[in-house]
Image (cartoon, rainbow, N blue to C red):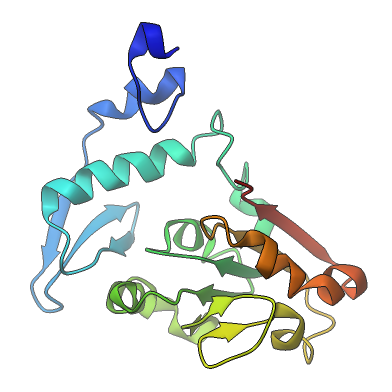
Amino acid sequence: YIKEHGYSRHLYEFKDEYANMPVDVQKDEEKGLYYVQKEKKRLYFRKSTPAKKIQKYYRALSMEQDRRSPHHYFNSVKEVTGKVFVDVGCAEGYSSLEIIEEAKHVYLFEQNESWLEAIRATFEPWKDKVTIVQKYVSNRNSPKEQKLDDFFRDKPDEHLFIKMDIEGAERRALAGCEQLFRDCKKIDFAICTY
Protein backbone atom coordinates (compact mmCIF):
# COMPACT_ATOMS: atom_id res chain seq x y z
CA TYR A 1 0.00 0.00 0.00
CA ILE A 2 2.73 2.47 0.96
CA LYS A 3 4.67 1.77 -2.24
CA GLU A 4 1.59 2.49 -4.30
CA HIS A 5 -0.05 5.32 -2.32
CA GLY A 6 2.69 6.75 -0.11
CA TYR A 7 2.74 6.90 3.66
CA SER A 8 -0.34 8.14 5.47
CA ARG A 9 -1.56 7.99 9.04
CA HIS A 10 -4.59 6.20 7.60
CA LEU A 11 -3.62 3.30 5.38
CA TYR A 12 -7.05 2.74 3.87
CA GLU A 13 -7.62 2.58 0.14
CA PHE A 14 -10.82 4.58 0.57
CA LYS A 15 -9.01 7.47 2.28
CA ASP A 16 -8.74 9.37 -1.01
CA GLU A 17 -12.53 9.66 -1.07
CA TYR A 18 -12.18 12.01 1.91
CA ALA A 19 -9.18 14.00 0.68
CA ASN A 20 -11.28 16.71 -0.95
CA MET A 21 -14.56 16.20 0.87
CA PRO A 22 -16.17 19.63 1.20
CA VAL A 23 -16.26 20.79 4.82
CA ASP A 24 -18.07 24.05 5.51
CA VAL A 25 -16.52 25.56 8.63
CA GLN A 26 -18.60 28.38 10.08
CA LYS A 27 -18.06 30.68 13.03
CA ASP A 28 -20.49 31.21 15.85
CA GLU A 29 -19.75 34.85 16.60
CA GLU A 30 -21.64 34.77 19.88
CA LYS A 31 -19.57 31.87 21.24
CA GLY A 32 -16.39 32.79 19.39
CA LEU A 33 -16.00 29.20 18.19
CA TYR A 34 -15.82 27.52 14.80
CA TYR A 35 -18.17 24.64 14.05
CA VAL A 36 -19.16 22.19 11.33
CA GLN A 37 -22.84 21.56 10.85
CA LYS A 38 -23.88 17.97 10.22
CA GLU A 39 -27.58 17.74 9.47
CA LYS A 40 -29.05 20.04 12.14
CA LYS A 41 -26.30 19.51 14.71
CA ARG A 42 -23.26 21.70 15.29
CA LEU A 43 -19.90 20.16 16.17
CA TYR A 44 -17.78 22.87 17.79
CA PHE A 45 -13.99 22.98 17.90
CA ARG A 46 -11.38 24.52 20.18
CA LYS A 47 -10.81 28.28 19.88
CA SER A 48 -7.16 27.66 19.11
CA THR A 49 -7.91 25.59 15.98
CA PRO A 50 -7.95 27.53 12.68
CA ALA A 51 -10.67 26.86 10.09
CA LYS A 52 -8.31 25.15 7.59
CA LYS A 53 -7.11 22.73 10.25
CA ILE A 54 -10.72 22.02 11.27
CA GLN A 55 -11.50 20.99 7.68
CA LYS A 56 -8.63 18.50 7.69
CA TYR A 57 -9.54 17.27 11.19
CA TYR A 58 -13.21 16.79 10.28
CA ARG A 59 -12.29 14.82 7.14
CA ALA A 60 -10.16 12.50 9.29
CA LEU A 61 -13.02 12.05 11.80
CA SER A 62 -15.44 11.22 9.01
CA MET A 63 -13.01 8.76 7.46
CA GLU A 64 -12.37 7.03 10.80
CA GLN A 65 -16.09 6.46 11.25
CA ASP A 66 -16.56 5.12 7.71
CA ARG A 67 -17.95 1.56 7.89
CA ARG A 68 -14.85 0.30 6.06
CA SER A 69 -12.57 1.66 8.78
CA PRO A 70 -11.52 -0.63 11.63
CA HIS A 71 -11.82 2.45 13.84
CA HIS A 72 -15.57 3.01 13.48
CA TYR A 73 -17.60 2.35 16.61
CA PHE A 74 -21.05 1.31 15.40
CA ASN A 75 -22.81 0.55 12.14
CA SER A 76 -26.01 2.36 13.05
CA VAL A 77 -27.08 4.88 15.67
CA LYS A 78 -29.85 2.40 16.46
CA GLU A 79 -27.22 0.30 18.27
CA VAL A 80 -27.37 2.93 21.02
CA THR A 81 -31.15 3.46 21.16
CA GLY A 82 -32.31 3.73 24.77
CA LYS A 83 -28.84 2.97 26.17
CA VAL A 84 -26.52 5.04 28.31
CA PHE A 85 -23.60 6.01 26.07
CA VAL A 86 -20.26 6.32 27.87
CA ASP A 87 -17.79 8.22 25.67
CA VAL A 88 -14.37 7.69 27.25
CA GLY A 89 -11.89 10.06 25.63
CA CYS A 90 -14.54 12.01 23.78
CA ALA A 91 -12.26 14.87 22.53
CA GLU A 92 -14.60 16.97 20.35
CA GLY A 93 -17.56 14.60 20.84
CA TYR A 94 -18.07 13.50 17.21
CA SER A 95 -19.36 10.01 18.09
CA SER A 96 -21.61 11.22 20.89
CA LEU A 97 -23.12 13.88 18.65
CA GLU A 98 -24.00 11.20 16.10
CA ILE A 99 -26.05 9.23 18.64
CA ILE A 100 -27.26 11.99 20.99
CA GLU A 101 -30.90 11.73 20.01
CA GLU A 102 -30.97 7.92 20.28
CA ALA A 103 -29.21 7.56 23.63
CA LYS A 104 -30.98 7.63 26.95
CA HIS A 105 -28.10 9.61 28.50
CA VAL A 106 -24.52 10.43 27.48
CA TYR A 107 -21.49 10.62 29.77
CA LEU A 108 -18.59 12.47 28.18
CA PHE A 109 -15.24 11.72 29.82
CA GLU A 110 -12.63 14.23 28.67
CA GLN A 111 -9.84 15.41 30.91
CA ASN A 112 -8.29 17.84 28.42
CA GLU A 113 -9.34 21.33 29.54
CA SER A 114 -8.89 22.73 26.02
CA TRP A 115 -11.88 20.73 24.71
CA LEU A 116 -14.40 21.62 27.43
CA GLU A 117 -15.69 24.91 26.01
CA ALA A 118 -16.30 23.32 22.60
CA ILE A 119 -17.94 20.24 24.15
CA ARG A 120 -20.30 22.38 26.21
CA ALA A 121 -21.25 24.39 23.10
CA THR A 122 -21.83 21.24 21.02
CA PHE A 123 -24.08 19.57 23.59
CA GLU A 124 -25.88 22.67 24.87
CA PRO A 125 -29.16 21.70 23.09
CA TRP A 126 -29.09 18.35 24.97
CA LYS A 127 -27.69 19.53 28.31
CA ASP A 128 -30.47 17.72 30.17
CA LYS A 129 -29.21 14.32 28.91
CA VAL A 130 -25.44 14.93 28.88
CA THR A 131 -22.98 14.79 31.77
CA ILE A 132 -19.43 16.02 31.19
CA VAL A 133 -16.83 14.45 33.46
CA GLN A 134 -13.43 16.13 33.39
CA LYS A 135 -11.38 13.11 34.45
CA TYR A 136 -9.32 10.34 32.94
CA VAL A 137 -10.97 6.94 33.16
CA SER A 138 -8.44 4.80 34.99
CA ASN A 139 -7.85 1.98 37.46
CA ARG A 140 -8.03 4.32 40.47
CA ASN A 141 -9.92 7.33 41.78
CA SER A 142 -8.18 10.65 42.32
CA PRO A 143 -8.96 14.31 41.62
CA LYS A 144 -8.06 13.66 37.95
CA GLU A 145 -9.00 9.96 37.58
CA GLN A 146 -12.18 7.90 37.77
CA LYS A 147 -12.82 4.15 37.95
CA LEU A 148 -15.94 3.23 35.99
CA ASP A 149 -16.66 0.52 38.60
CA ASP A 150 -17.25 3.24 41.16
CA PHE A 151 -18.86 5.75 38.82
CA PHE A 152 -21.64 3.31 37.83
CA ARG A 153 -21.97 1.55 41.21
CA ASP A 154 -25.31 3.24 41.95
CA LYS A 155 -26.66 2.66 38.42
CA PRO A 156 -26.74 -1.16 38.24
CA ASP A 157 -29.73 -1.52 35.93
CA GLU A 158 -28.60 0.79 33.15
CA HIS A 159 -27.88 -0.67 29.69
CA LEU A 160 -24.45 0.75 28.91
CA PHE A 161 -22.64 1.25 25.63
CA ILE A 162 -19.00 2.09 26.36
CA LYS A 163 -16.91 3.68 23.63
CA MET A 164 -13.28 4.01 24.65
CA ASP A 165 -10.45 5.65 22.69
CA ILE A 166 -7.79 6.92 25.06
CA GLU A 167 -4.55 6.62 23.15
CA GLY A 168 -3.11 3.52 24.77
CA ALA A 169 -4.45 4.00 28.32
CA GLU A 170 -7.25 1.48 27.67
CA ARG A 171 -5.59 -1.23 29.74
CA ARG A 172 -5.63 0.91 32.91
CA ALA A 173 -9.20 2.02 32.21
CA LEU A 174 -10.35 -1.58 31.74
CA ALA A 175 -8.69 -2.56 35.01
CA GLY A 176 -10.93 0.05 36.63
CA CYS A 177 -14.11 -1.47 35.25
CA GLU A 178 -13.58 -5.19 35.83
CA GLN A 179 -16.56 -5.40 38.18
CA LEU A 180 -18.73 -3.49 35.73
CA PHE A 181 -17.97 -5.99 32.96
CA ARG A 182 -18.44 -8.91 35.34
CA ASP A 183 -21.70 -7.81 36.94
CA CYS A 184 -23.49 -5.62 34.40
CA LYS A 185 -25.91 -7.79 32.47
CA LYS A 186 -26.53 -5.18 29.79
CA ILE A 187 -23.30 -3.82 28.36
CA ASP A 188 -22.05 -3.20 24.84
CA PHE A 189 -18.69 -1.75 23.99
CA ALA A 190 -16.36 -0.52 21.27
CA ILE A 191 -12.84 -0.19 22.63
CA CYS A 192 -9.77 0.82 20.66
CA THR A 193 -6.68 -1.28 21.22
CA TYR A 194 -3.21 -0.07 20.31
